[in-house]
Image (cartoon, rainbow, N blue to C red):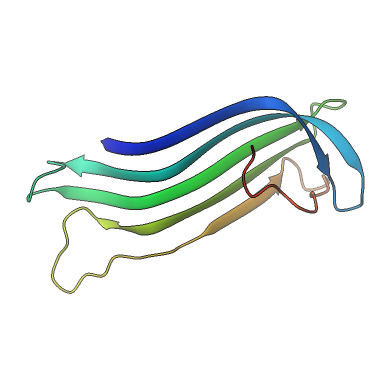
Length: 122
C-alpha cells in the first residue's frame, strides 16, 4: 500500500439540529482526508503495478453520540475521488471519475436525522 495526502483528526463537543428542530449537544469524533492519492496492490510505482489506484480522494467521516443519551448516535460520511480504477491501465478499460458518496445514518431506525449535516466536520 502506498498513500500520500493530508489527514485531519478531530474530537470535540458539537451541537447538531435534528429534522424535527431539536438541538442536541453531542460528542463528535471525526477524521477527514484531502488530496489523497493511494495504491493498494503489487509492484506499486512500476510499469508492472497491479491493484487499485485512487486519485484526488477527499473524505470526511464524523461520528456523533448524544451527550444525554449514549444510545443515540449518528454517522456521516461524505467522499469523492477524481479517479479510481485498476493500478495498471488496460486497453479498452476506463477509469471511473467523480463518484461522490453521501451517507448519513442514525444508529437505530427510530432516531431522527439531522437537517444539515456538516460538509466537513471541522
